[in-house]
Image 1 (cartoon, chains in turn blue, brown):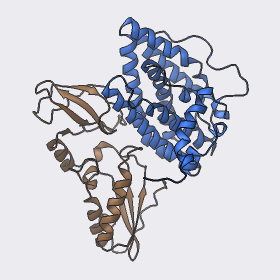
Image 2 (cartoon, chains in turn blue, cyan):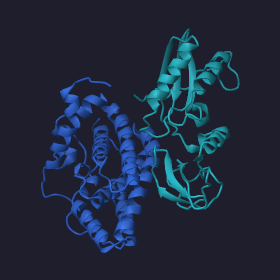
Image 3 (spheres, chains in turn cyan, blue):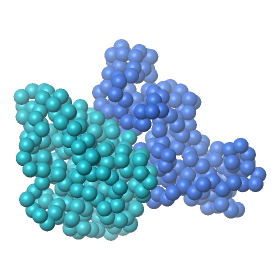
Image 4 (tube, helix red, strand yellow):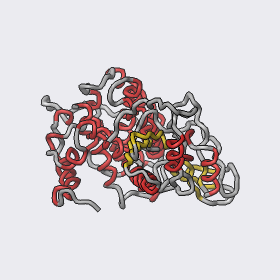
Length: 233
Length: 182
């Protein structure tokens, strides 16, 4: 189940990244919001990974190269604006993808129909913060611009067809770009320029090729389970 | 963890609901379990009970649907259902999670809504059947559960649990949870 791994790993890895904000978010409401979004994603990851095998083994005992998530979701949190940029790019994509999967008859339709309503709230949250930061102070505008620019090169991979997902990827891409452009215009921000992917022809996250920060994230995520196999509390 | 729902097998002595009197009684018991995080409402009032089938003597299968995919209360709901059915003489209880059709806030009963409001949680507005859920774009008035004013503002889309948003009342100044539409 290549597709279950790809979609499940996207949700799992982003969930972990968002969880890293616990205790560090700028205000209490955001602490709670990011943790809630992380929890939704973790729920999706559990369903998806269970379609592919044992959820715990898949999450905690695979090596870096066996993960199939896009590189976007493994990128470090950066400042709050960069996290919002990652949320905007990813939740917009995930909502459009789940809308399409929910309409189909494939194995992901029940989860997609359920999760798309949750993801709509994630996207709404990211859009509101993009507007506030972009159309806020000079400092917040500049930070939002930097976050969007820094992650732009990871957005091309989102539209690499995933085997097993019956989706028209090019129309998904066009819908994503239209939506992102509209939000950024309202936020007085420019759509970043520059390449949408890295220069490496061997592929990226979907082929198991990840960026350097991912190994450190996995080490932290898997440490407890590997040190104390089967531990419960 | 999640398996497709089999069609309910017709039972010879079935009533209008397709359940035997014993199944109806057990479903009522299971549905009377309070929600672990919103103990003022029962699982039946929350609308998360999807069905119950007697598989054989002393063997029951219960179908439960989560409010949110990652709802951490699901496991404790399942344990509570198992316990109450054990206590009523059913030794073998299997609780299955079903996702389809997805739960919506429209599944919360009128009684459930009343109890939420009574406990200081603004109940969800009815969803437009065509809208399909998610954030409601128009700022619909949410009534303060403390003073009844509709002059309330959104503080955060997420609150103490995934299913609630945090609002504040401009009239009485109190913050309150709003069970947001899904």
